Structures are given as structure tokens and as C-alpha cells.
Length: 498
Image (tube, rainbow, N blue to C red; front, side, top):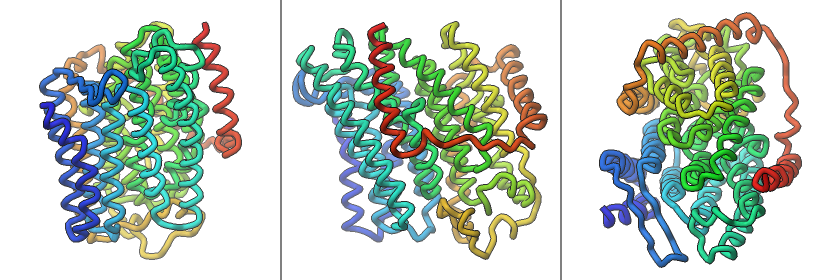
């Protein structure tokens, strides 16, 4: 298994660079890399035996592969494969496929690192690869959004790197366990970097603009897996060090509520999905013991939703209410929305039940409010009109500039094969993943989520359907994002001292 692990680590990078030499095989080679990760993650989950590798010595590269990492790797593999299917008959260049595969390998590396320096390298490579994908359209807007993401990410990782050096100074080791007994400022700096990188709480409000303004396949990758590279180490810290666990859970609850608060008022479909990602990341951190399963279900759902919404004729939810979509397309949208709301028969139900069962008493009220809010704002998608008006969903005329910021394009008949192949993989995964926690299907467990969903729908129809409130985006502004990092650092320092 050790040899296979080493081959699996380098495989995406070797194939990614090989794609440049064999451009005619770019799609096949890229998909091969994602399939290899799927197979490897399956073996990791089946064997349930942790693998620890020290590639240099106690002060060098330390890798840890266990079921927690297996869930995250499996998510990365499925989402990446779905994006390749989605783009199969598009005009994406060899550069795009190579960069996506390199990003895939970098995210995998972040999921298995157990030392601060290796994680730092993986996260920096992720930042560069993500920037290149955001800026892929080469428009002024996409380049600015990409540079904004890159600068915020690099500043965050500067905080992180200083914290890692302080951990080494205290223990002469870069391993994660060095956080125990490390100076408070080291913990605060590392957490500030990872919270920002992962899109957690106020310091992560760079996420809505970045994810909503990127092309749909890139948004699917970022919301489905890339941000999880920042939150995975936080879940790992909570499991390794008992004193860290309450801090991680606190930010989980706070992030879940913050994302819901913004999303229920949002009228832009892609921004609502991006804000939902902020909220769902909070669910992952609220119960670190079961973070892997929730990350899997969220990754599949969010990738599917971004790919679907990216093909709607408008991002404005008010306009979408007057433009019925084809029934089969609406069904795909409803399945994904049901899953993230916690509806039975889909893995989102089991993930929510398992998460709620692993909450501490002080988390229960906040997370139930967040679950109710999730049902409320996803009702905006579930109750969109549908019919057989194919021409209204796939217009032949370009959209007005204000509706087409995300550079989405109509879905021509030639690309429908790739779209439905991606949907089959992602939505089929939501049904298949039920086997992970089939014990969730009891009468008591079923009634509560159903009640939450129906209450959320009722709140939507009575309050938010007609409510027109636009929340200020002050904290999303570039200069404020940097300032919030400093405030987060102070708050974290106080929490660690406490």
C-alpha cells in the first residue's frame, strides 16, 4: 500500500505535465487521473487502516492517510471527474485540463499532510493553480477576481507560515501535534491563515465574489473541494488535540449561522450558492469526528448545483420565476437541493443526522437554526417554475451584461451529453452514499429533518419570497478583508489564552 500511495501522490502531477506533450489526449489523461484517485480513496475507506509515512525524518515530510482523509480524497476525485465530463465537448484548451489535474493533485496533497511545511507548500500550489483557472477567460474582470483571491490567500498564508515557525521554535518539529503546548500566538496565526484560506467566518467573505464570478466548472471545483483544503487541517487539529476542539467547533457554529444569514436575503443564484458554501463549511467543522462524510455530501451537492445554475438563462432569482425550465433539468436541481436540505433517501440526510448527533450541547440551538435557514433559502431553487419550454432555458441570444457576469454560456445540444454524465455521477453519488450511515433511517431521525424542511419552506413563502432586502457587502471589500484578518488574529489570540 505504501508504494501505491507514493505513486498516487505523484500521478496527477506527472499526467498533468504529460498532457502538454500529448494535447490530443488531454481529456482522457485528465479523467484517468481522477479515476485513479477514486480507486485509491475507495481502498483507503475499505481498509480503514491508517497509513503514516515519514519521507525524510522527524523534522521532514509527514503524511497521514486515514478514513477522514479518504472521504475528502473521494470527494475531490468525484467532483474533478464530474467537471471533466461537463467540459468534455466544450472548447476548453489543453491548459485547462492540465491545470485542473494539477489542482486535483495539490488538493489531495493537502488532505494527507501532517506537518505544517508540507501543508504550506500544498496550499500555495493550490492558490496558484486556482488563480490560473479563475483567470482562464482572460477578461479584465476574471483577472481582477483571480488576483484578488491570490493576494488574500498569500497574505493569509504569511500569517500561517509565521505561526508554523513559532511551533518549530517551541518543539523543534513541524508536525501537527506540535500545536499542543505551542505559544498562543502560534496557534492564533496558524488558525488565522487557515480560517481565511478555507472561507470560514468573517475572514472568509472573499468567497462569495470569487466563487460566483468564476466560470461554472471552476466554481464547482472551488466550492466542492478547494476550500476544503483549508478546513481539513482544522478538523485534523480538533481530533488530535483536545484543547483545540472547542475553538474549531465555535467557528463551525459561527460560520454556519453567518452564511445562512447572508444567503436567505440573496437574490443572485450563484452568490446564494457561494454563501451556502460558507454555511456548509461550518457544518463540517461543527462536528470534526464526522467531518469527512459531511464534506463528501456537500462536495457532490455543491458541484452539481453550480454546474446546473451556471446554465440558467439568468442569475436573478426573480427573473427565473417567470422563465420555466425543462422538467428533467428542474428534477436535477431539486435532487441536489433536497440533499443539502437533509431530505431522506439522499446522503445529505444521513450527513446532517450524523452531524447533529455529534454536537456538544451548546452547539445544538445554533446548528438547528442554521439547518432551518438552509431549508429556507434552498426553497428559492426548489420552487422555481418548470415545464417543457426548452427554448427558454437555452436561449440563442447572448444574455445582457449584468446577467452574464459569471461568463456562463447556453447549453447547446452537443454538450448535453457531458452535462448529464456529470449529473449522473454527482447525483448518483448522493443516493449511493446513503450506505455510509444507513442507521440514520429511523422514524425519529426522519421526522425531525422533514419538519425542519417544511418549516423552512413555510418561512420562505410567508417572509422571504416577497422580501426585498439587500445586505451591505462592506466586509467583502478588498481592503476590509485584510483588516478583518488582523481582527480575527486578535480574537483568536484571546480565545487561545482563555
